[in-house]
Length: 442
Image 1 (cartoon, rainbow, N blue to C red):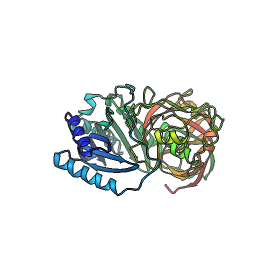
Image 2: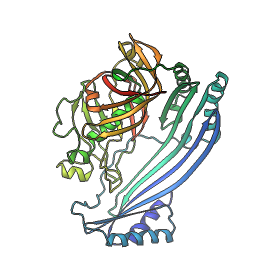
Image 3: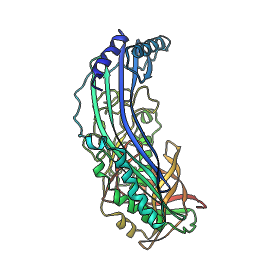
Image 4: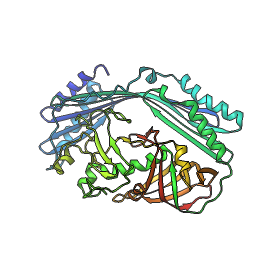
């Protein structure tokens, strides 16, 4: 996007006297998919998308497009200005922000990762497929890589620019009626331990064969990082999102500064220098701040954009999503403070419980208490007297997450990056009295 400054000037000129904000999202992305030990798909996309927001006299309008010729720009802006005239006034609408100093953040762009070719992805898939074929197992999954560049600019002179690279590897292995899974995401492809992930998925698949049925009920659960992060993402988004908090729909309302969760739980949102780094400014071009959400189980602070900060009479923490946003600001770069020991240590400390590799089909039932439902998947095992004894058929859970993380009894020492709502650095965990509401037939 070498000519982006020229395009921005053209957009601002076409907008005329109204305030104008532009988000430019350039994604260069490729994916190789494999199934039944054979590559089945290879796709790539290189696209630049523009989103223009226009503000005037309490009204706002938004148009999106993916062409930047003079004709395309003129057509899009004329449409946006015409829409703007027909909008109702919003007394809560804020003017566009002015330029503020932005933190540097981490360097998350790795040229070699962004430029990896299909042959590299094919070889990563082939390593697992060949091993599975020899062992009578079946592999499927995806290998991805690419880069993203985001630009936020407005007609008041603000210009913020960010670029990163990415790689992701997700695999599922089937061994007769047993299934195993492993996944990792990274900014640098060299940080993905492909051989370790392959071994994990294959080992879990073999160990999951012939699962026994277990009765639903309350169990101690040992959650691997991916499973723990799935639950914590909901807890943090619905507990510490600024709009939910301002509207009185968060469990944190009236409880900031109080001990609500286990003293073993500390979580911060830190895109700058934390374990889950990312965009150092928000989608209005405002600097992101490091925010402690939970410290030793004490609820500390939600995250805010300019709108929710004004409503709550506090300062923005730089967490705006693209405006307008029905969800409001949410934490997207979560780091869970590690504890002690390994996953094996958490298992050894469990008299009777269930080891969970992964959850899927997780959904929110009640926002105020973060009550959720979902199912275990791809490696669910019974723990007895500190040992994994046998595989069990999958469970469905129905559980209030505020209650669940009051019952957090152990946090492991090894945090890994996990993708989801954004990025989270999460260790394994052990929760007591977790409600498996029903069992399944598989």
